[in-house]
Amino acid sequence: MATGPREITTPFRPIPLAIPDGMKPNEFFNSTENLADLVHNNGLLSNPENLLLYRKALGHSNEFDCSIIYNTSKVILDPLGRPVRRTQVPDRVLHVWNRMNGIIIEYMMERYPDPAEALILAGEASLDATWPLTAPGVPSIRMLHNHFMVFPMKDLRAAPHADPGNPNLTDGGQHSLFQAYMRDVYREFFTRALELRILRPVADGDARLDLTGYPQGLPSWEILGGVEALKDIRFWREYDEVLKGFLDFYRSFFSQVSTRNASMPDGVHFPRHVEEVLLFDNDFLKTARKVRDRCMTDARYANAIRWQPAFKQLIYRNDEGRLIVTISQNSIGNAITELLGVVVNRVPDAEAYAEREPALIEKLLEVRRRLIEADLGDGIATDYWPAG
Image 1 (cartoon, rainbow, N blue to C red):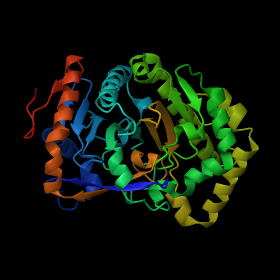
Image 2: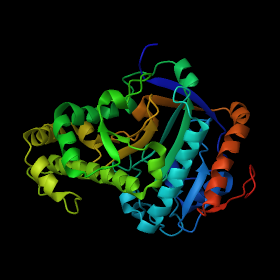
Image 3: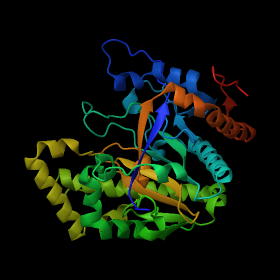
Image 4: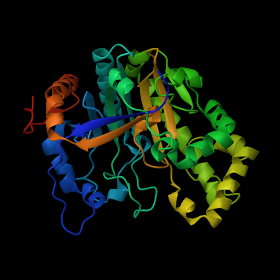
């Protein structure tokens, strides 16, 4: 079977939401009113830390698909003031969130033990408006949330090949920017800055899925100990270290693009390594000049750059059954599935969705039961399920 990205079609039930006259969809979806609808129609569990587990109404997969959102809509009314990445979440919230993540991933691994039968992934992408607010595709809910998904491998094998030139797969050319011109310094920075014991760097071939050929050229780490390691708080601290390293690299690079010979950005997590590895590396600075020069003459290119850190961070299971962590810049705003070469074409089809809904909800309610038992929240009743 030829290797290449796949495009699958996922039916969904159209959401019965009326957007007020004069508002754009992304303006309404950022509102407290919309988040209330999310709770009432799709909410599964909530807790005092404002973490909400919910069914994805516009899901990527009807096999298993849910999210946890840090629902600050009632306590922070300013959408631009809400936490949008893990490093901005209070410690007490992050502690609970990590426990929830571990339980859900453990359930997925238990329910789908064979990597030849199911692709398992969990992760998050930056949701802040790091590009012009007038651009299409600006995040619809500006609050940090992560995704938990399972795709049957038989469906992926049967799916047609996706267009490899799809901008969501190519990341608008900025993925190749990191990998083609700064690959060595990118990896050296991670290697020297991060002190990891549970996460072990792996080669591209060990991280890549045979079916799709993705991820491509990204720094990746194996989780030593597999799913049991998710019960160790050190793993989650190392997971955050990977994100902090990425944020330092991204901010340092685009500060040099914006301003020649710029000072080190304020608040970097690894200042010594930023200075010694990044700001003294010729490839790093030459590439910054290349991008800066193009911005001077190409307005469309300059407008497409996300000047603030935009990322996708992912935990997934590889073909050998090992859990892998990877991270990528998120230049377009694409889904984390596309990091693994899976393009999802979501189509409105209430009848087709209804056929899959009972089995999907059964699994989501089992996950909720486990979270309630672990004292991680209370169930929410909707028209589709009781509070439990």
